[in-house]
Length: 59
Image (cartoon, rainbow, N blue to C red; front, side, top):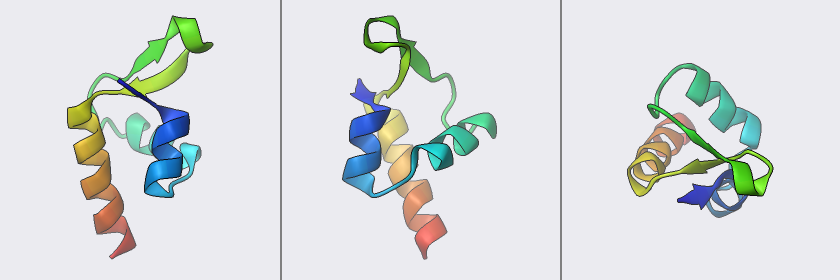
């Protein structure tokens, strides 16, 4: 599971973009880690999907 803070840095995205895409249900269920102040965490599959979306949006 990859936290949102790490993901936005690695993919050069903004957290609000991920939250907006999440609202559109592009990732499926996103888990919020109770041990990390309910920070969003993503599975490897979701990360792959996010990378594809980011590449498409940036093109």
